[in-house]
Length: 330
Image (cartoon, rainbow, N blue to C red; front, side, top):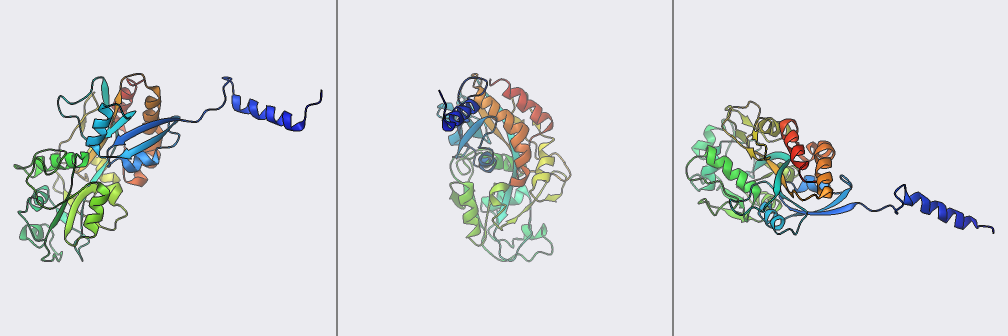
């Protein structure tokens, strides 16, 4: 019996999609994650066919990301901070995944360069300094014409990993009165306006004369706002960028459990001190899809995408520790 050309072509097409396993070619696995708004840019860049999986990422903030991970409504979570004692689920790991700087952004008309210390930032947020031409600010900014403009502080509301790291910095550098906390105003007496997300914070600063706030550099890079240079442990005023954040993160201590301990007072030349690591939260439950995704993220996607998005791809001991922890997932 003669076979039609159409039939032959159909058979060839079927064979080409079946492959050696005898099953039709399948689409990439899908994963769901939520959490850190700091990490949102890089997670969106690493969402398609990474380690054989496609990712849906919801930038909810670190606190919600931890809650949803603990409730097992996501495949893995993302957080810039840790679970509070007694609230963490069992049998999971913190995987240090990606780093980057937290920029202090200001909207002071006519001012394109500004030096700030941790002590000054603390006083700005607590209302002890209320004008941008205050003598304490002028002392660190010789030659800069500072206006007699009211300071308008803006901070993150809700449970934010960026806030947790920022208040950790202030607690170490600005001294008494500051407590490390993910909800900026809950443990610290502050003045100003709250913003639900980094994006809202940046928009608020940009549209408010005299405003300042803190957000991940990836969110503010295209805003046109001025980034303050922050005084580091070596006494240098340093702007936030990938190189200066990497210099700081490279010498921070990472434990075998993946948790990074920050020391903002160590003198590190060329380092931008307000920098952080964002963690993946993953269960040690044999989920090889999550394992393969995170391994490909660390080895392939982050190294190719991070710097162009103002993130720091982990390397050295951080990368070695991350890969060791990822091995525990599958």
